[in-house]
Length: 605
Image (cartoon, rainbow, N blue to C red; front, side):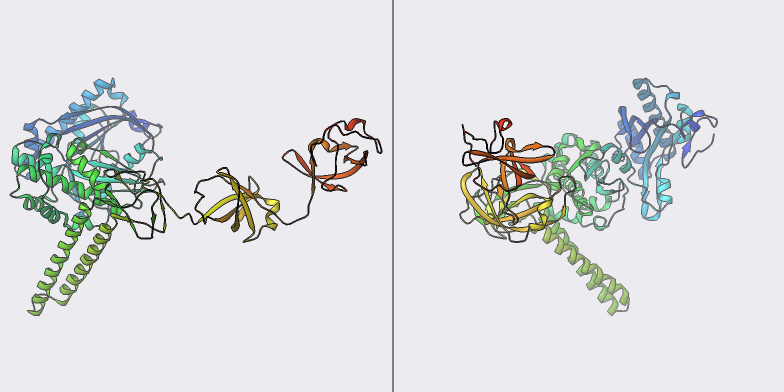
């Protein structure tokens, strides 16, 4: 046996698959996961090129029975037999692979690789330590398939956090459309993957608690492995003061990259919920997970258009509802009516601000803690127990806490939407009770005092366009009304395809009869020479020369002209022809100079 790359174990050192994996375009892989929720083994078949192509095959979950879950809990807590549990969990993964292969109709030689994450029992990225139990060699021997294990070690060795490990997989699954998007994975710990429009626009980190505190509370209080259907949490009430104390943990103010151990908040959580009823404790812990997930958005480079929820937590209706409430904003009131004239900074609507108000209380708690710490540091300095540097550190922490309080108050103010300028209110796109995000269209406000209309002018007329040139327009809504305006902007470049330049004109709307979105027919008088126009049928050609037949005193006269441009069934011409002249349109074949002509029908001049 030999290792191939970090953590890779092969069942046969001469296996032809090892060489084949260097040349194949795609590989058939089986991925394995035992999450910190301790609910069971997840196994899935994937066909992938290892980069951006992923074809999903069959998948299954084999739950852990209560007896094994208890042994796993005890081993993690240091009161059980870790070595025995590691063998047992390896064999449970082996069984999951065999069941999956049977269902998928796969033999061992049809599977290129098995990804074996194992089960995390320790994760301390701040000191470069992580451990996932699971015996990769044992699994490879039993399956006869190459196994890759210890998936976090290379990242940790390179100075990374070693978690989360799923962002590149999320990128391949999500595809390039609809970004930025966030993939939320809720296991024992919750993590997010933010995906921007570019291939390198990727950010992943642990947000905080997921299911672990809720599961542990249920086990402790009612002897259940988890809160089925969120029933406990739904029946309880969130204790806002205790929630604020949990949210004051400094982890949430750390900038990514960052990751967590499953029990990172165990002591803080245990103290915060001590004495609560099972229902209120579950409700408060659900709010804790939801608030920290929503709070992760502060680190995203741009607001996401949508959140995609994955992991075991998505099966908890109480948790999903709490996340939706924290991530989105619920409209609680509208302060304006359709058609109302409002002024800049007038209140338009208000969003539910309970969560933002909670963040203010959390930040206020941190300020008080920092003030107390500074006071203690000064007393100890005065007694020669602490140094001046300790006091300076405490002063910096207090200033940072005050800044966070200011930011929290600004976020609370953002839950009240105000008018950015004077205008008329349109019909709202949403109603009271709806949930909105930063991407939601809520209401329109139009300043209709002056309407701006954009239109295009042919490139050949560019030299005759000037700022403030008068413009006239008509609209189908008022067919007989001339609307007068002037040019306010002329684009700096010509469109290379249409060979036109974009022009913007302003039309005063003093009687408020015009509306944004109307169509306009724009008339622009450009300075330049005047040309006569004749119907297309009047223009004749002979020996490469163009001419028209003009009627003078009832006789035909041939007049040489030069065609300049065709326009709407007319031809602009240069020559000895002036407005009002009568030209022949039909019967031109029989005409000669001086021939008497009877006009059978006149179509105007």
